[in-house]
Image (cartoon, rainbow, N blue to C red):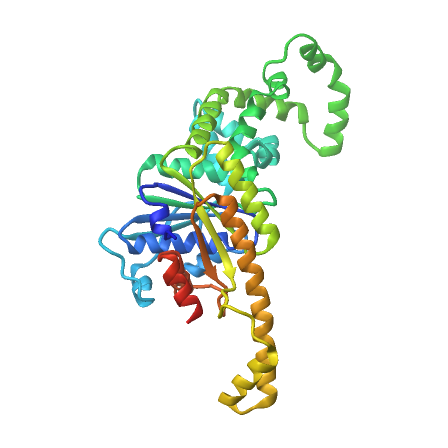
Length: 383
């Protein structure tokens, strides 16, 4: 079974996708670290509210601009990148990214400021952006266009529905091209008459309630935003095209339980349906079987007791091992079902580690499994 390095060979963008709580942030950081060690200039992007990525890379904090991980810190953890290898990281600020997008498409500084300082924009900019998913793709597109990095690794936003990420550019264009927005920007016919006659009383009441002139703010916002429509549409289409580009590859990250496996299979089918490039699946926190058949607890306890001469402890250890094997068998069956559904696509298993991954040393431990073949993964996990 292929390693991650083989799976993403020749790609410039790797998107780690999947449901929340399956280790996408850790996997993304580990892949970025591993590729930097192999001589690539890599940037990993995340929207992780727990800020685990910054902690794992030894950074006090991450912002909306890429920060370089100190090479000295990497060397202290036994990572000595090949020539050209650099590791960078950033924590996406969706609001700041959208503000920058407005500034880019504004006709001039006055139009930019009219939108950015508008109270309506400040309240709805999150929804207008099509949620964090679109802003993640927007920042990815920006960095890719600049050409500063050999590889970009995106840790997608936590989501109950991983398809939100694929649909984000489309949602933005639908909003911009929608009739509701066009009525405000270019009111005609009945809409114009309603805007000029029918809203005065209502808006005057709203002004007394909210404390500002809602009509004036709406007019200001939509007038200023109208000059940016074409730029936003073009950008959203280009961002969407990047998802399906040959230089982009998706990795699905999941756990070995039944529901995450089912979600991974479903997401894979949607990637194929949408013409996206699929690299493989990383299954985290897998329990590898330590033997080929289940041993009776009593027999196992006797064998352990022969080594440690403590009957009570031997019994407890034997029961723990037996329970572990039950879970390992479950994981094995679920992953076999996943492999069957993937039709031969790579499935990389990362074992359940003794401790949580919270630093570069932990990422290196994960990379012992990501960047090797299946035979070596099994040997390391069961030795």
